[in-house]
Image (cartoon, rainbow, N blue to C red; front, top):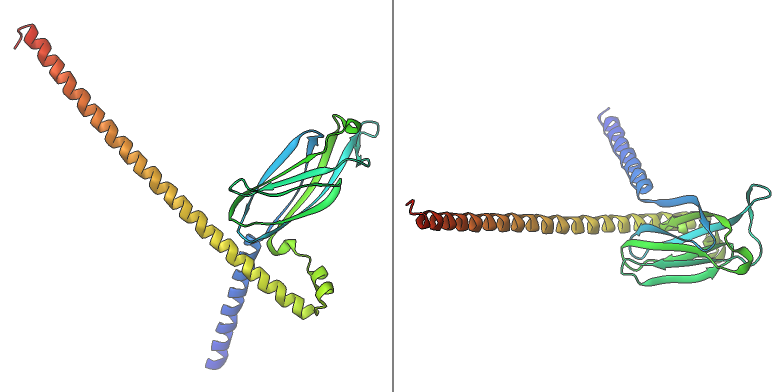
Length: 229
């Protein structure tokens, strides 16, 4: 009975750990899917917080508003989408013209906020049209097509699953390192702010003391001039 009880406790602990790992992974994973409206000459930018050495993939599709049908329809031939990506240091990671529907990929080199901008090429054919852009941004292991990897490297289902799990663990470690970096940056900012508040308070106190001394000297001189003292 003791052995069975210990085994049950161990199994329960193991299950809790697996659940915690799954929850952490789901929280760390990043998938953003949305659509937005822009004019053909308009530029739209997004900010994505990405750890370093992380692969990012974006899938998009552009539709044009048809006034006769009063709905969005596939775009005409010739309309393209310029994708530009900058890292937290404003260095350009990607700048390329794509078709009206496509996929872009880049890898981050530093942790932080990356700027992803999209805008259509401006031609006389499509002046002033309204566009709807469907955008799906995938970060980390979600950006990897494991089926394509398995076909290229001829891996079994078990092998590709093991690789996927290893890359998921690696991605979680990157996310944890990035969170530590953010915490450290926040701590430094807080300490710097506290120091500035302290210095400002001391400066105010010093100014008040000087003002008080000046007023006392001024009043003393005034009273002496009036022969009140």
